[in-house]
Image 1 (cartoon, rainbow, N blue to C red):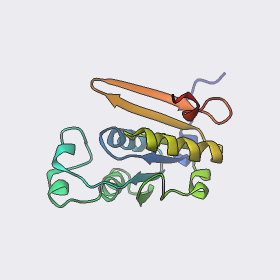
Image 2: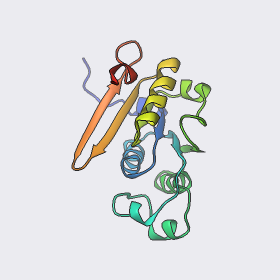
Image 3: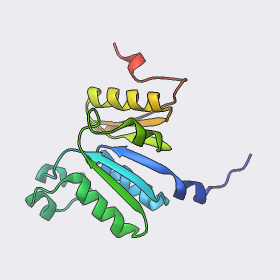
Image 4: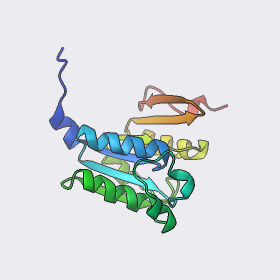
Length: 159
């Protein structure tokens, strides 16, 4: 078994990140630093002053101008790697993300804070046959779960 890092595979990966808040900021930044060159960022919200204490990609000027989170992260990620392909969807994962786009992803990373959004990501990914990684923050604790089509399901575990 090889224990080496396959940079070409990472660079060629197509990754969708749903949620560009605190966790999404960290995930997006780390994906770029890792060398991922094809990212789709999804969020419907605008930068607010309250985001600044936990979001490395946002600035005070972004909050004062009420800029869209997806526009700001796209600009900052391109500044980190000008050759990368960053697409954005300013919208809700429940209504504005199509199955055809999800099918072109290698993985979807959920950085959302609602069960409904997680349910919608799960439904899209299971239908598309794409794995997704669910990340969450609760106080000072974090959780990460991986859902693989045909193996496990977020919605199946809901009460």
